[in-house]
Image (tube, rainbow, N blue to C red; front, side, top):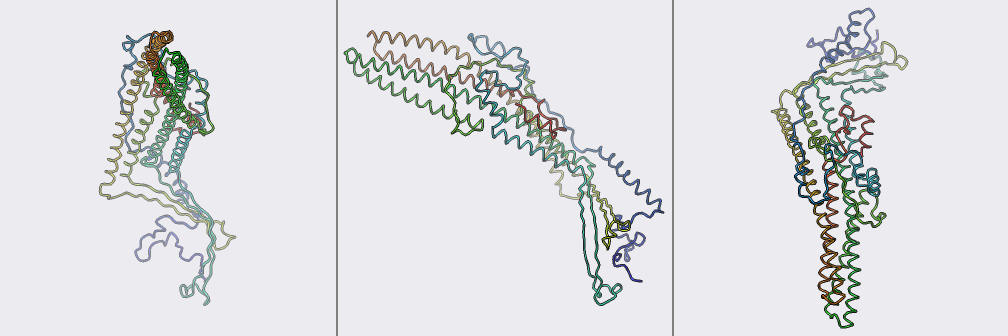
Length: 548
C-alpha cells in the first residue's frame, strides 16, 4: 500500500518517543495534535474543557501579586502663615500701601489676569492660551505621554498573528525510495491557514508597575503643561505692563523735551535783550539735546516689549502693533491663602510629587526582575494537501506550550540596578522638598517686594509733587530775573528723575503682583490634574486642554 506523502514525518501521540532515547520528542512535549480529540475519548474531552478554567483560576490567584514598595507621599514643611504678610509688617506703612485680600484663606480661581481689569490684557491672554507655541509643544508632549501609557498597557493582552500559507515540494527518489514510484520523485502541495498567540501573564506585577510608572509620567507631563501655561501667561502680563510703563516714560520724556524747547526760546529772548548771557543759552541747548536722546532710547525699549508680546500670542512681530497708552493700572488685593495650600496649587510642586510616584513604581518594575517570567504560547489552524479539504475536521492542528525563564547569574546586576533606582527615588524626594521650599521663598519674596515697593510709591508720589512745586517756583523767579537759569535746570532734572523713578516703581509693583500670582500657582490646583487611572480618557484630555 502506498504511503501518503502528506503524513510523512507526522507522529501519533502513542509513538511520539524518540527511537534512540525513548524520551518524548519536543513536538509531543508541547502538546502538538493534528486531529481533534476522538469522540469516544471522554477523558480527553474533559481535559480540554477544564484546561481554560484552570488557566483562568491560576491567573486570578497569581494576579494579586505585585512586587514593589508602596508609595507614600513624603512630608514637606508648611509654615502656619506667610511671614511677609503679617500685620506687624504693615505697622509703619504709609496710607495707600498694597495689602493682601481678606480673608487670606481664599485662593485665586480661573483667569487670574482679569483681576487687573485691563480688557486689552484679557484679550491678549485669550490669544496666548490658543496660539502660544510653547504651550502647544507641551500639550503634544502630554499627548505623546498618553500614547506611551496605551502602548505599555497593551502588554496585559496576548499577541495574536496568523495568515494563509501555501507550499509545493518535490521529494527526490534518492532521498525517499520507499515513497517514490518513478525516477522523477514525488511532488506534493500543502494549503494551510494557521495562527498563533503568545501571552506573558503579569504574575508579579511588572506590567502593572510599568503602567503605573507611565501613568504617573503622563501626570507629570500634565503638570508641566499647566506650569508652562502659567509661566507664559505671567510673562505676557509682565511684558504688557512693561510696555505701558515705557509709554508713561515716553510721555514724561516728551514733556521734558517740550519744556526744554520753551525754556530755550525764553533764554534766547533774554539773551537778546541782554538780561541773560550766552552761557545760559548753551546750557539749555545741551539739556534739550540730552533729553531728546533719552526720549529716543525709550522708543527702543518699547519696541522690544511689543515684539515679545507678539511672540507670546503666536503672531509675527512684523504684523503686530499696540497703540500707545499710559500705565494707569492699580494693583488689586491678591488672596494669598495659607502656606499649606501652596502644596496643592503650584504645578511644579505637583510635577515633582508625581515624579516621586513614578520613581517609586520604577523601583517595583526592577524588583520583579528577581522572579521568573512565565510565557504561554499557542497555535492552531488547518492544513491539507488539497484546497477542497482545508476546512475539514481531519485538517485541524493545534499546539500549546508554557515556559518559565529565570536569570540565574548576572554578577549582581539586578541588585545594582534596584539600588540605582532607589537612590534616584531618594534624590527625587530631595528635589520635591527643595521645590516646596523654593515655592515658599518665592511667595515671601514677592509679598515683600510688593509691599515695600507700594510703600515706596506712596512716598515717591509726594516727592514728585514737591519737585513740581519747586520747578514752578523756580520758573517764576527765573522769568522775573531773580534766579539764574541754573536753578531752573536743577529743578527740571529733579522732577524728571522723580517722575522716572515713580513710573519705574509702578512697573516693578505690577511685575511683583504678577510674579506673586505665579508664585501662588495662579488659578490652578491639583484638582485639575487627571487621576492616574483615568489619564488616557477623553474627559481627562479635555480637562487638561481647557484649563486656563
